Image (cartoon, rainbow over all chains, first blue to last red):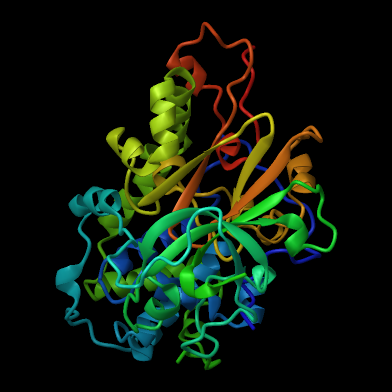
Length: 225
Length: 204
């Protein structure tokens, strides 16, 4: 079983509302601040992208559903700051002292922003795990969808694609395994593939017989057919 | 273990989201952990410097230069990096080309993964539950909501961005654009056409 964020294929969400190309990047000023606070605190180096994604997914289903997008970000960030020991609950209550924080030396300065955003954080790593599949080969995804290392943990195989038969479309090299990395268990890099599935393998009533869905899946999510 | 306690620390901050952000920014600034000027710089970057105009340049170049297009489809990461487009949320790029037989469309059902260096911050609809839930199961109905109807002879391939690979759609070049310059072509490339929920504009 996965969590509330795993919504691919779900019914009942209503129409998508397109926006013109010239709509503002941030609909509200606080959206921009939420994004910027999240990126700036990320550079304190106390978590990785998988940990921060998992923090959003761990919001209670009620909160995840009722919160707007950036509300999820800022709430998950607050939880993460406390869980990782950067802030205390007293800090959040406004009760703490104003002494400089031990991590203050890592603060992202304005003149460093361009460099940090431009350098990014690649997810490919050398790995000892041999690449088992090649382009064109048939594979089947694991079922049920779950993190096999941590119960209720982070994973990137969506529920809708569990137990499905597909074909290797691309070999992306070896990448950090989020199931491990999100729980501070190490990068555990392994081969990552783009796997293509016929829509008929995933849905009861596909719209068109030739439609397909492609997912990026780690080798441990796959087995031979 | 995942933390599943329901006394989430975020409930200690004001419930109104704008006040919640403000409170957190104030606390972190006071502690010396963030610099408000750096926040302004981040916002300026994604509001004014990085956006779909980057992706549009790549598409227009691919429309006019077959060698560039071939290289782009083979190894997008290094090709777009050579144009200066690299960075956060664009570390591993793949470009997929639409053809008369196949239309490509990109989604992230699990969160909101998106090629930031080429398209900037995703629009609200891309991050909405409706798009995340429906794009994989009924892409043609979703496309219709964007005013796009594909011929029955075209298949749809939906890319669910489940890893750190980011996908950009290379739309087909509109007809009657033979005499246009690269800049004029770039002006026809919409953001949605590079996500796959739209088509490029046609010259007026």
